[in-house]
Image 1 (tube, rainbow, N blue to C red):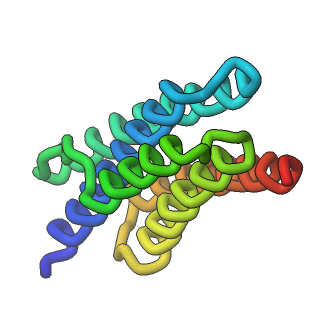
Image 2 (spheres, rainbow, N blue to C red):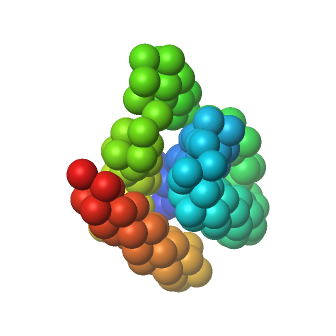
Length: 151
């Protein structure tokens, strides 16, 4: 596959997983009760972060002649359905919320790590994805720390 096409595919995958992240946080935000208001603020921040990341990735994709990915992945949709099922059966306590959030963060962190190491990215694309990967790692670590404290 030509390098430009591979770069576009990698960027589109990252756009898709950022879309999943936004949808996941919005789903959780709708279900969080007032005792976890701090999580609402944090999750809103991360949803906004992923919207920004998607816009940045879309711009770099367009420069290379690609189109932006506007949908969500099947895996992301299934994860949100699992969150719905857990909420029905009492999985809406702080630790459960943070466990599910960390699972989502694990997925996006892995996607970014793969893009940086195996994505054959260069120039502006590599610089952008590397910067975003650092922010994703930081978000993951914060959620993991909050989860560990909630045990």
